[in-house]
Length: 179
Image 1 (spheres, one colour):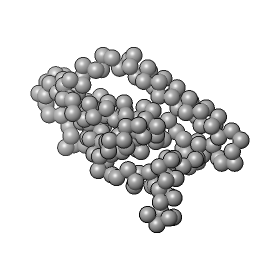
Image 2 (cartoon, rainbow, N blue to C red):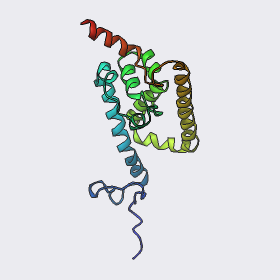
Image 3 (cartoon, one colour):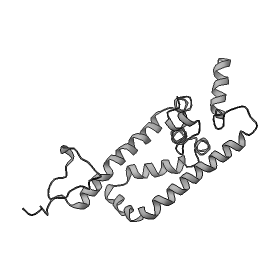
């Protein structure tokens, strides 16, 4: 029996439940936009969390990064939640100080969340060059942050990169003095 030429089979890397199977007769272009839906939902959720959560909750919360907990060294994404929360609450300077790529990443996330799926398909043509460039900038920023963090802690008794931020120190002083 010859294969059905009217149906679109999703690539094997996208496993879909039976309720998410693309119906026969759906155009491949429309099916490809469905591939972005999960990413866009996650992006909307993360941006909404940055808007809703108060900065004090994020600044004084537990360390969730498994890499940092295991090694004591921040991963390339450490500080993004604090940066996004600070930026969405109008504290752009603190957003850049917490993670230099946080505000640009937030802008990109908002663009991804609101851009129509059909428009996102046009960006696939740029992926072969854009993804390595973005990854290089991201990792270069991480290495620079590590080097600057170790240099700023030279001669101190603290573990590298575990110094509390100025905001955290002010909050601790404020809670001790009863303000």
